[in-house]
Amino acid sequence: MKFIVVATIVALASTFLVQTQAQCVPSSCRCDGRPAGRICGDGSSNCPWGDVFQCNSDGHTCNFGRRQSCVDCGKLSCP
Image (cartoon, rainbow, N blue to C red):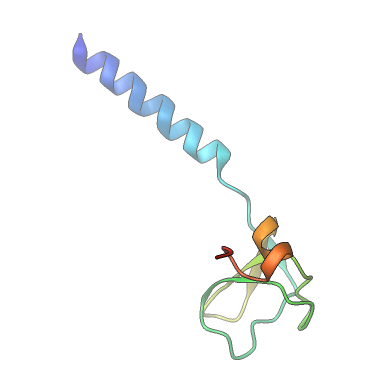
């Protein structure tokens, strides 16, 4: 019985996590010279200020959308 309860909780938790993750939409932002990873758009290279972008190693990017820290301080997290 405990196994069923634990299995149900794990299944519900994983479903919740998948549904709450932000979608990364393909973007025309260019990560020229930037390493792969997430960055805040700075208004240059077609990367709008305040949005979070994923720079991929193949040069393609996607946009996670607006993040308040990118708007407030231009970084993924403000001090």
